[in-house]
Length: 262
Ligand code: NDP
Image (cartoon, rainbow, N blue to C red; front, side, top):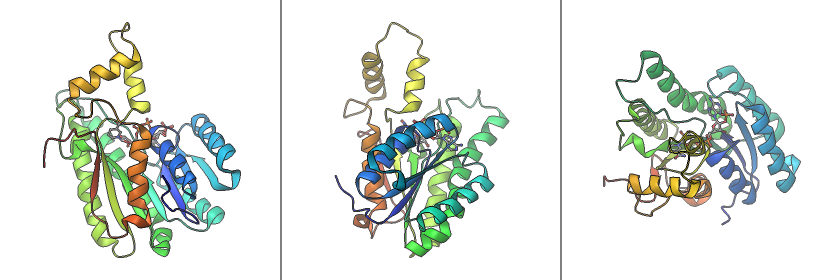
């Protein structure tokens, strides 16, 4: 699928694996130049080198940083401007879920989770906003179905995700008509997070295929499987593209039908 990103520049936070990396690949194939960030420099540089080999050194920029470091995010925005001169799409994707019930979640955990979920939107949005306004660009946030359908074993992630949806709605109004702001709501997508949980599984005799099949069945996913990162990337690419030019303040579910609300 080609989404028409020729001449455009996309910034993807958390671009070294999973949904972020698949989004970089999809956007590069659609003609964009991409800038990626993530904390672990080795994983990021590996990913960026692979992308640059296929799509060209001049189309990929990678910087190791945490999106929770406002100064580093600001410097990253400056480097994107110096190197590419513009930013048309910001994909706020960096992060991970926290598995804990209310009883297990300490005050520090609550603070860390709210900081990650909210400031991973706030700092990059603030840093890239001038370029996004100039380009009449778009923000796509990678959020979770947990925002609307909380899970008791992910109590603080669910609650913070709902706060993110609320923030995005406000941004979509405040930044209009210059910048569109939308979200995807991910159910279960087979990425680094699930690979780590598979590696930590209790029943070591269970194969990867069996573990994933059992997970999809236990969760009651109507399509009967986890999503692929490329399937989330396709939704992000659509929402960020000119094809979605009249869509803002919206959310697109990528969950295999997992939601139970209408
Ligand atoms: P991955 O673990 O595969 O990718 C996460 C990416 O984010 C990595 O590149 C990681 O690199 C980066 N990252 C994490 N924290 C930071 C940080 N503070 N600063 C910069 N980069 C960071 O997971 P997914 O692809 O699944 O996750 C993408 C997003 O989707 C996340 O926000 C996740 O919570 C969300 N999501 C995913 C679901 C799923 O089922 N996969 C379900 C619901 C939501 P590094 O560790 O090196 O920083």
